[in-house]
Length: 377
Ligand code: MG
Image (cartoon, rainbow, N blue to C red; front, side, top):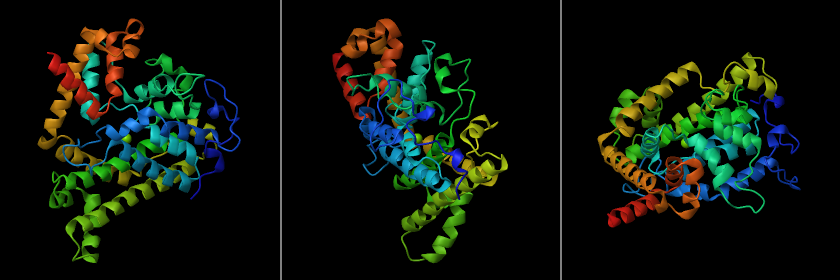
C-alpha cells in the first residue's frame, strides 16, 4: 500500500529539506540522505552506542541489546514501514540510526540522573536536544566545519521524532518549524522505536529470567493472542522457541497495524503532499485505537515487571550514584575536566559542560572515570 507520492520527502539535492548549514556541492551519485546516513554511521557518537546500556547492563550477559543493536532494530523496522508506504527510505533509515545518539550511559536511569543533577542548576537534560548538539558541534571530522553538517530534514527529525517542542520555550529551535508537524519519515521513527523496544524487552526480560512466561500470558493480551496458536502448532518445541514465534508475530502485527493505520489516516485526511502532512492538526503516523490499547497494556506490564523491578533497581541506583558524584566533582572543580571541555566552561557554565561530557560516555568509560575519582579521594 503506497501513499500518494507527494507525501514522501524528495531525494533531490535541490529540495529545501536537503539544505546544509555549510553548503556543499552535490555528490555525483549519492542522494543527500544517503550521505547523512554515511556520516552518522561513521560518527564517534554512533560507535559509542555499542557501549551504552539499553535496559540490561553487561553484568547480565553480552547477549542483551545494547543501544547500538536496539538502534539497528529500529532502523530495520522503520525501513520496512517506509518502503511499504512509499516514503523516503534513506531519510527514514538515517533518522532511525541517529534517534538515540544523544542518550547518556546506563539507559534511562542515566538519563534521569543527569536530568536531576542539572535541575539543581535550573537546567534540564533532554536526549533529543543533546543529539542535536552532538551532530552540530561535538563531532569533529571535517576540516571545513564543526559537526556533521547534516541536512535540515535530519536535524528537524532529531528534534521532532518523538515529541513536539513549543516555540515559546525553545526559541533556539525556531529554524525547525516547530509549529508544523514533521514529515512522516520522522513521525514513524518514534513508533518503530516503540515496536522495537517493546518486543526486544520481552525477549531480553525472559532471557534474564526476570519475566515469567505464564505471567506474561495472563496479563499481556496481544502476546497471549499469538502464543495460543503457536503452542498448538509446536506442541513439542522448547517453550522459549514457542515464545519467540509468538513474539515475532506480535512485532509483525504492530508493524502491519502501523502501516495500515497510517495509510488510513492519510487517506481520511485527504492528504496528498508533504505540506498537507506538515499542516495536519495532528501526527498522521499512528497505531489503530485497538492496537494502541494492546500496546499500552504490554508497555505498562514491562514498566511494572521489568523496568521498575527489584533486580534492576541495583543497577539504577549505581548509575544514579556514579553520575551524581562525577557531575558534582566536575561542577565544583571544572579544571578536572579534559581541556577541550574545560575551555567551554566560561561560556556555557560548568553544569552544562559536565553534563555534555558525561552524556557522551559509554558505561565502561564512566566506570573507569568513577574508579579514578574514588582512588583520588
Ligand atoms: Mg530508542
